[in-house]
Amino acid sequence: MLKVFGLVRMVCDPVIRKVPVPNKGEVSVARFTVAHNEYRKVNGENVRHGMFFDCEAWDSGADILAEQVKKGDLIGIEARLREEKWEDKDTGKTRRKNVLRVEKFEIASRAKNNVK
Image 1 (cartoon, rainbow, N blue to C red):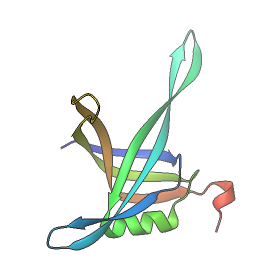
Image 2: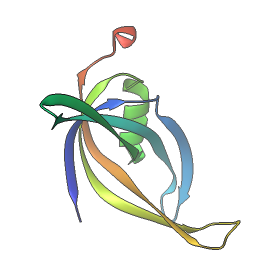
Image 3: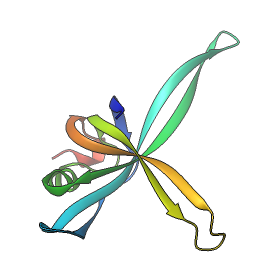
Image 4: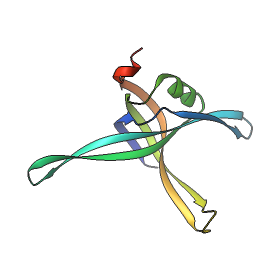
């Protein structure tokens, strides 16, 4: 298991849905995308390199995140890296995608239009 800790910016509002889980009934899942900027020296100049990550939060964490966090907010996250695999309907090939499963989060600062 790979743990990830980071300070990231919300690219979009979380999208929440309910999914059936055996022996639990329905639980909430929030999916969202975050961005992180990394700066590198190129020819003596700092150049910004943006990276985007798909994330998900489950259960009560999903409900709280969807209620409190909005696009543009800066949040600190603790997550674990997880791989999703599926078969492409058109080609039949196996597809893969890495997703950060957020286990803990903390709001570092709100976007100017999200101040409550």
